[in-house]
Length: 236
Image (cartoon, rainbow, N blue to C red; front, side):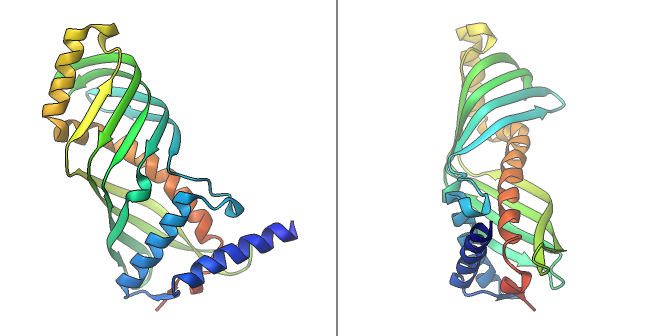
């Protein structure tokens, strides 16, 4: 147990010191470097902190209960998060609010699906394998920051109450196998509509998917932050 705690402390401390921490709360450039470096480490996984690799990221269930559409995605795998970059970061002076943009060049999601309802205007129904590829995404992220006392008796940060606004920047392709129990004409019409109206379709279905992703990444980020004292990350 002592060896595990020592490895955990040394790994977190080494990462924090390698980023030229602590950053001044007003130094957005320093904080962006810090968060991008931590995000990269988290995506690659930090086993000694209990943080598993998140690219590819396995998501067991994603559920969308929308007004006109119900869907479930099962055993999905997301690839491409390691290419996302944080920019336009802002932290308020009392360090209770965090805002930034996440720029993702390419993301691929595939797994099993069940869907029923209307895809904007067209009826849709089916279950089977699916794949979606997004060429470019911009996500505005806002969250609360909370100071908590860790097991080491020091102050640590925790990211809470995340709000995201997703903006697809380029075409998104969809492939849903076995729509309408394999009726090719109906399936073809839905896929053609989704391709020609990719932005509107994305805006309809995207939020449950992105929140599932962010809940996972935030959990890993908070595990990291629990291993690093507040004073090692931010100074006024």
